[in-house]
Length: 191
Image (cartoon, rainbow, N blue to C red; front, side):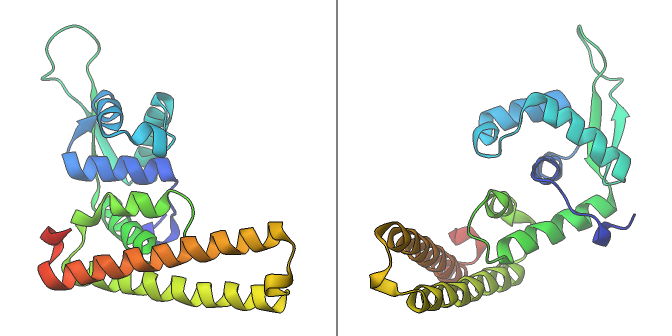
């Protein structure tokens, strides 16, 4: 299966980011990394998910593994994982897509944020501009829907839901605009 045809689960996405950042790494080291960075809570990843995810990446041809025969001490020899070229290409594409998306809910965008170092300044600018514009269009559509349904004459529970959406979407637009401004002024280092 070619990488363009594959989609990554959030667990696979995160695992590939960690592998890309660290190079070859064992499941145990990934588990420690997940705990140290606080990923376990916001990405909802458990220890079992790490090992299952690594095997899935291996079977899909997105990661490769080898036994670490240089290990000393007690315990079994660890399996070290690294990304294949296909895996790296898919990971970069997934990061770009997650940052460009106009979706404002879910952890996918946060996973993309945690891998911005994979992208060039131009790629980041384009992704955040696309995100800002997409959310702005979505905000206008939601406002129009609210107006068509009665606006201020809607029941309180409907008004509060619309208000919540308006505020969240505007904050996402402001966030993207702020990132764009920082990137234009000082490059990636300014983030």
